[in-house]
Image 1 (tube, rainbow, N blue to C red):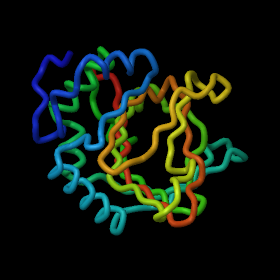
Image 2: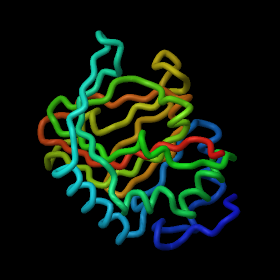
Image 3: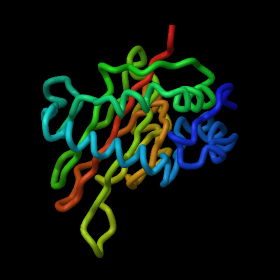
Image 4: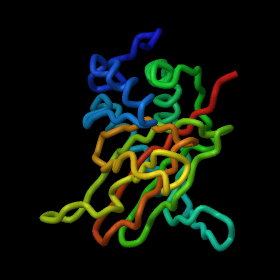
Length: 212
């Protein structure tokens, strides 16, 4: 369990951050919080900052396996002070320490706001780099799809049992506004299929490395 208190100003229900999450993470490499995961005011502030940053300080990131890259197409943006404060908070640090058993620090150069818009934006299969992104904290800030239909596979993150898709699927994590997930992303391969027309997703992709 955390050795520091988890602040009410960060998580929506600090009392929910108990042994079940630790057990799930250590068994599968992933645990899911919410919705709601975060305090409503913090969620709103993060979303507002993300939209500003995506409008003002963003770039389209594409990659191709033919060039030896991760196949992807999505929009990235630099962090602002709200995101930095959240990811470096004592509350987040304590929760991640409880899950992983390791003291972690944010990897700012590997952390960003990300937006996927349908049709076709996606993220190909990959594991994260252990030196800069041993663990991930994904915080979904906005997720939407057309009324009257189910979300497409693109609104799900496919997380595998091992370091490639041949190891089998551990979880399909559906994006919901104010949902968060901690993932052992350097050990468990993951991917996001292309979004369908009319779908969108805004998230904060936090990377953490072992401190010290």
